[in-house]
Length: 106
Image (tube, rainbow, N blue to C red; front, side, top):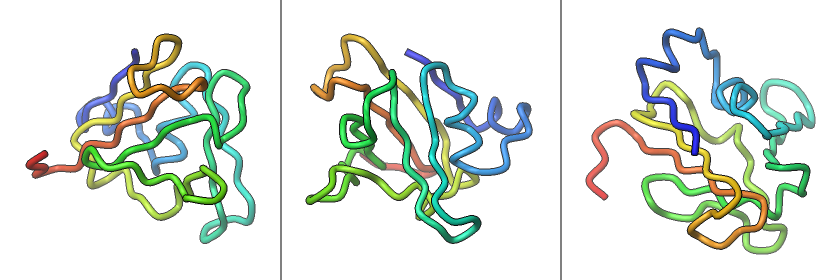
């Protein structure tokens, strides 16, 4: 399990959520079109559909594709970003990514 809190993200000079995830071991972030384009993440070489992503405890993966567009989220509003691989507790084979926003109550 790898976890960055907001201070660690700031110290590392992270410029966005995609940048933060690229710094975590075993992740691959794909960028399909620049600043406003689709950005997806996969873990351990499996497709993005095999990676569960949640924001404030709620799953944010698309119903049809199972992928998440990371461009919808900002690293500046997060209090923590956590990646769990291998024996991921939620059940995705690739891994689980939890985004915990500042001021969260869940």
